[in-house]
Image 1 (cartoon, rainbow, N blue to C red):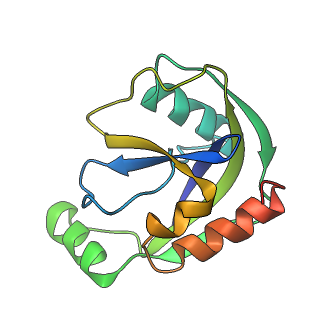
Image 2: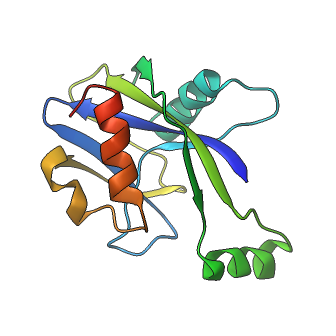
Length: 147
C-alpha cells in the first residue's frame, strides 16, 4: 500500500474538492499526496498543500483519528503496471482538517490538478463516487467534529 495524506479544507458549510488531471470529469477527491521518505504525515500534508496551491497558506487544525485505507480497482492497478511496470494495491491515508488562511484559492498546480471546486458538505454524495469514498469521508468528518 502507498502511504499518503489528504486534507479536508472546510469553509463554513463548504469543503474543497480537487480533480486530478487523469481523472474523469465526475471523479473528485481531496488535496494531498504521498509520504516521502521519513516525512511525518503532518510534514507531508504541509508540503503537498504548498506545492499544489503555491499562492495560498494553510493551518493544520486537527489530525483525524481514522486512517483511510482502500484498494484501487483492478483496472487502475493494471494500467499502472502497463505504464510503470509496477503498482501499489491501494492506499493508506492520514487525514487532516485544514484551514485555508485566505478567502479563496488563488491558483493551483495545473500539471496535477484539473479543477478545484467548493461544494456544500451536504452535497458530497454527488461528487464522491469511488467505492466507499463518501461513507469514509462522512465518518472522518464526524470524527473531526465537522458533521
